[in-house]
Amino acid sequence: DHVVDRAGRWLRRQASKDSAEQPFLLTAGFFEAHRPYPRDRYRPADPAAVEPPGYLPDTPAVRGDLAAFYGAIAVADAAVGRLLDALAEAGLDERTWVVFFTDHGPALPRAKSTLYDAGTGIAMIVRPPTGRTVGPRVYDELFSGVDLVPTLLGLLGLDVPDDVDGLSHAAALLAPDPPRGTPVRDHVITGKTYHDSFDPIRAIRTKDHSYIENYASRPRVDLPLDVAESPSGAAFAALVTGPRPD
Image (cartoon, rainbow, N blue to C red; front, side, top):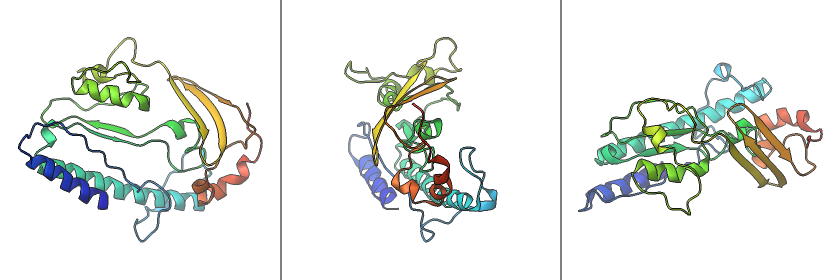
């Protein structure tokens, strides 16, 4: 609520400025997807309706943990809706690109703090300005977080400076049909050196395969502190005591 209220006030001030066409950038970050998930802030989903991902054991504790997580997601989802409403009420939605993204996978065992798909796969939604005709679609190509800045610059019609890392997917996103031929990326490189502890790993991901190398003697799956202390972490811990392959 605090983030949405502050962001809404900022947007209204932006809209009231004399130069209505002045470019702006607003970033809003939410705590909601982070642990813990207190019931007085988030109403859990129905544990019976939860479908645990294949990398977690299907136990009542895990289902309850996921139900609490989904309750926090529902609050974040409603907050995004309020931000979009504030943008529209300020009259800025017709010329504003909106990007929703996360920085890593969920705080669950074998997800956050790993280079498996569940750890490096993120949520990402891009909404064009409402004044532009761009049809909805799923962009089913590899995208790295480092590509976000050059892609946004491309969507805005701006040149990408030589010292900006990453690749622009703007042309592919603006194409009326899914692009055929050579994709913008044929691989993504990911890495981790330290989170709660020293855990040097590197990986390369194509659309079909993932190759990971581990450079230190570690348990089979690293459990960050917040994950280790969770119900899912407790249910998972006994499964990952063995050594991790190179």
